[in-house]
Each structure stands twice: as C-alpha cells, then as structure tokens.
Length: 450
Ligand code: PHE
Image (cartoon, rainbow, N blue to C red; front, top):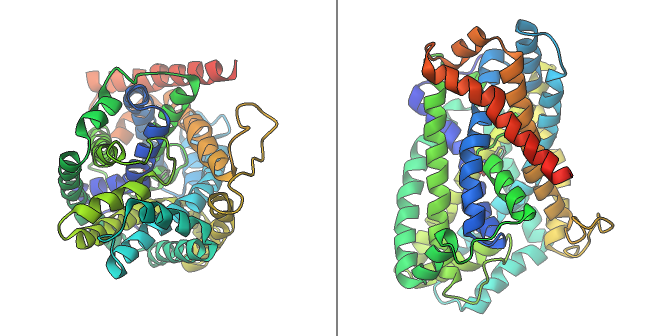
C-alpha cells in the first residue's frame, strides 16, 4: 500500500474527520428531535460505547491487518487466519452501501454549501422566521438547485479522491476539528443565551420526556453506528493507511470522545432555538436549516459567522464523503482502472442514486414505496434509504466485523493488529469483541424480528 498517514496525530485527525460530519451536526439533532430526546440519547450513549465503538476497533484492525481495499483486505486476513467463511462478501456489500450513503449525503452537504453561499451573498440578517423556513423548503422544491449543489459537492469529493492528496486530507483534518470545536462551543453558548436553554436541556437530558419504543431504540443504535462510520468498510480503508506505531484502542477512544462531544454540542446549539421558535423538534431533516439561520439573524456579524459555519460544515461533510468514495476507488484501482476514472464512476452512480433523495424532498415526498408493510408504510424513498442503512445494514455490518475478528482472527495476530501488549486490556477487549458486542447485537436483531 503506497499511502500512509504521516503521523499519529494526522491519523487521529483524519479518522475523526471521517467520523465527524453531517451525522453529528445534521442527523443527531433531527433524529433526537424525532425520537423524543432523552430516551433516545440514553440508548445512543450505551450503543456508542458497547456496540459501535468495539465494532469500530474491529473494522479498523481488519484494514490494518489486510493492507488493501476492503474486499481484498478481508480475503487476505481470512487466508492468514481461519480460512473459513464468506469474509469478502462484507467488503463487497460495504462498498455498495458506501455509494448509497454517498448518494444522500451529497444532497444534504450540497444544501449546507448552498446555505453558506446564501449567507455570503444575501445574508440571513434581515430575514423573518417564515422566510427562513421558506428558504429550506425552496431549496428542496427547486430540484435544479439541489441537483446543482449535489453535483458541486460530488465534484469536490471526486477531485480530492482522484488526486489522492493524503496531505490535503490531513491538513483539512488537522485544522478542521479544532476550529469546528471552538465555533460550535461559541454558538452553543450564544444559542443558550438567546433561546430557551431550560427546555432544551430538559428535552435532551431530563426525565420528563424520557420514552422508549422499538423505533426509538433502533434509531439510537443506527445513529451510533452512522456517526462513527461503522459497518460499511470506509474505516477499514483508513485502517490500512494507519501507521504501525498507533495504539488502536487508545486512538478509537479519542475519536469516539470527539465525535460524541461534537454531537452533544450541536444539540445544545439547535434545541434552545427550537424551543424558542415555531419549529417543532420533530421537524425532520430540515431541522438545522430552519433553526440555525434564526440564530445567525440575531448574532452580531451573523452573516460572516454563518458563512464560516456552513463552510466548515461542508468541509466536515467532505472529509466524510471522501472516506465513502476512497475504498470503492481503491478497489477499482486494484482492478486496473485509473484513480480518476474510478472516482468518476463512483460519483456518477452516486449522482444517479441521489435522485431518490432529491425527489423525496421535492415532488415525491409522499411516495411510499413500501406502503404495504406497517413498519414502512409512511417512509418515503429517502427515509427508507437512510433508515434502512443506518438502522439495519450498519449494525449488521458491525456484527459481521466483530464476529470475524472475535472468532476468525488468531489472538496473537489480533494483539499485533491492535499494537498493544498481552495483558488485562487485551483480554477485556477480546472478551468484549468476541462475546459481549455480538451477543447484544444478536439479541437486539432477534428482538426486532420477533
Ligand atoms: N460518520 C459520518 C458522519 O457522521 C458518516 C459516515 C457514515 C461516513 C458511514 C462514512 C461511512 O457524518
């Protein structure tokens, strides 16, 4: 493998950059809002720690041991260990799902970029709340606009991936994370001072609104996997690029912590605004686009801050979309294609598939393809896609990785893959990966099916 990250810090920032994205700032608030707040957050926290984080370690270590694109890496690790089981199947299906995720991710990221452009060229400062909701709606209904910004975003992803600028990705990650943190904390403080902080805190952490249903449970687990990018082999690719000196469990702990903080702070930016406006918590995917401009409209120098914020959100989305495209392109490269050809193919397919999302936001918002089943009767194409991937495919992918690593990799190979010493940390981790996480995931899957 020719590419390697240049330092431990670079690996950490780039992988954190891949994990932190629209999942934290766009999806976390809107899914928490739809799922009623604190009950969702409680399950989300548990799922993050006991399900998604161990699966993340497994996915990274598979890439690190396999040193190639996901299907190839899995096939190699299989040969070096038990030699049994359909390993690379999960690599292939992961690649396919990566393109599907990219297809809806690019539409939302395009909207974030458009909002940045709008803040810069027109500004939110004189806008009334009704005009702000109309802006969100207008973007969605005007399909030419959403197509244009989706293409621009896919084009940016394609360019970075085909130039293979590890350096560029590294620098983006290095500066992005710290600046994103500072900006979000500042915005959260401001939002809590002008909005309804009490209602927000109560909604997110209080017991009044605590409620749990199967739907909330699945949404929380799905969100935990999505936010850490676990289950579709995009992290596996970064595992292959990781340097030899990295202590894997420690690195993952840092990434999980950063990811969680960004999501919680994003919640503290959004919900005080929600409870001080006419927007309801369950407003859906438009939630951040309907509430954030309300804040920027009041903030001193709000349009400059808004431009900067949406720019950073777009860059955060880019560092994630790169991680979706990179493994597919790496596999096409192994098949003899040039990087740029591979990147065009992936972006082209993602663009065609993005119509499922663009149409669901526009004229086909009430087209429910799986109307005949009770559970999916009111889900349009975008919702089926997003929820099917997050709540079903990703946990299954995570389960597959824990089973492969826990049961299929020799202990000594695994210890070397983690780059840790023989000792209690390794034994505990091995127990979690071999028994605890897969057992809980299996119980959960069985519980939902039965
Ligand atoms: N974790 C990314 C986010 O939170 C999304 C993602 C999912 C990226 C799966 C890659 C693979 O935005």
